[in-house]
Length: 352
Ligand SMILES: Nc1ncnc2c1ncn2[C@@H]1O[C@H](COP(=O)(O)OP(=O)(O)O)[C@@H](O)[C@H]1O
Ligand SMILES: [Mg+2]
Image 1 (cartoon, rainbow, N blue to C red):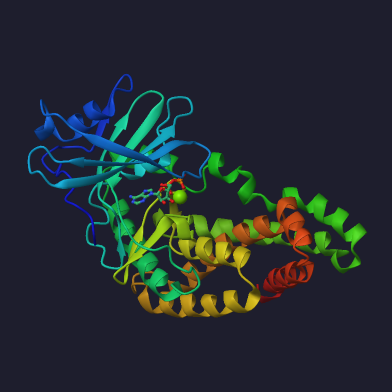
Image 2 (image 1 turned 90 degrees about the horizontal axis):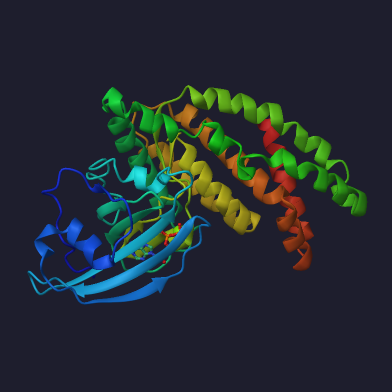
């Protein structure tokens, strides 16, 4: 991989530093890499495209390490705070060493986090590579996800009680996550009932989709009691880089303390949204086969697949039923495909 040596910060006890206010980039970097104190830093900066609404900016900095003379490339991500609460992503980076033994996914090293009352500044190593075609990497993702779930599960169960509050606040089942529109497809049903009046192919479907409400609550209750792990929850091609056959995963802005299987559901849910049925079904079969083989025996694979279906349904139902999606399919004259997706989802009701 074409990444220049990032400054090593291993001698510091914690990667998170607290500041009352934001300072210059140079002083932040000197705080993270004390060997640079008193040295001039010449930095060139480029802005990278950010997507999440709470992200102030993402920047790519290049500089020469004044100690070694080597090129250094660093990404700085600034995340806005609400009510002084640090971002999920910043909290994730406090779990140092959790994924150090990962062999499937590669994760750019986090150089440090600076917390001010208004923002979290996350500094990571810059990675290069191509964005993958998401359906092509199903197998590789299954292996990466199974390993991420296993390593993070082992980490979470070994944490001292002092960290319990941190992980409690990051749990998928906290109301501040569950109340988000993306996990509440029921809000889209009135618009679907309207569509049924205008287009008879969609008549009566809103009523049938209501049956998912008790089904997903039952799945949620089962999932809650299953083994915890860290779930990335945002498998988009913009968040992955392929380089030399290796898969680098970035962007922990959606991270949660989830349950084994959730990430597979998040991946397949976003694939279902973007691809036609044939591509989706082939990738799904590959993913599930590889995931079954990769999940360590200590986990109950059927329970994990139940959790996968739960997050898949939450994601797919919301994306397919929301009025914006319906408008998009209408505009592109693809209502037939949308109907096919609706029937696929309704078919899952019968499978139980
Ligand atoms: N470590 C990195 N190496 C290379 N590019 C990165 C890195 N982090 C972010 N980027 C680029 O910046 C974009 C936005 O960063 P990301 O962390 O995904 O923010 P957001 O939460 O807004 O999606 C990414 O899609 C990617 O192109
Ligand atoms: Mg992103």
